[in-house]
Image (cartoon, rainbow, N blue to C red; front, side, top):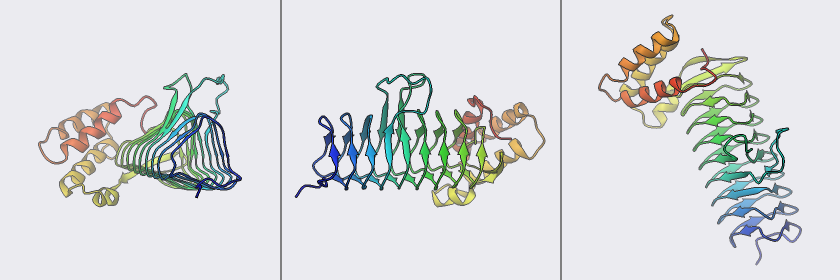
Length: 262
């Protein structure tokens, strides 16, 4: 029995694994590749040069692989690449990249993308990320693994959000959130280390303690950013289980282009 509903429209050239399920009135474009056991909900549109991996669940009325919302776009064959085991819920929009950047928007593995989320052109979303309902990612946003973005939040273009960070609901983010940090507000401000999330993911008490010490240096000790970085650099060389996560935090800060929230 065919797994493609008779009312769905699949353009010639699309590469669809025989185990893919496509719901009523969905539209699949000619340059789309969809891997095994992925399901496409009714009325969804998958278009552009889009590659989707295995075991993804795309809900009803999703718009995936559409043209970037960038006035410089001139129909270049830019791409969208989605990994495996992602849940992409109803009315989500995810756009392809632009030639002004890498030319590709990427979504990794095991992500949970809730209803009405927008992922703009050239975004790079890692693995195990949660984007809550109506979270809006402008173009060129980079989100690290295990980050959580609260519902109704807006993220400015070119902003980076570090791994294991958390942005509270209804926040406006215009600068980078370092890894492991909780932020919230309009405009978003830091509110500590994501301790509970780190415990759930197996970080040791020593590693969490070291990150808390780094956070105090960065945000609580009235140090300039350069002074804080110098002391965090020493903390990262202490010789304990906190060295690696603190080094990750420091590396993120030192490579920030927009500056970190502070």
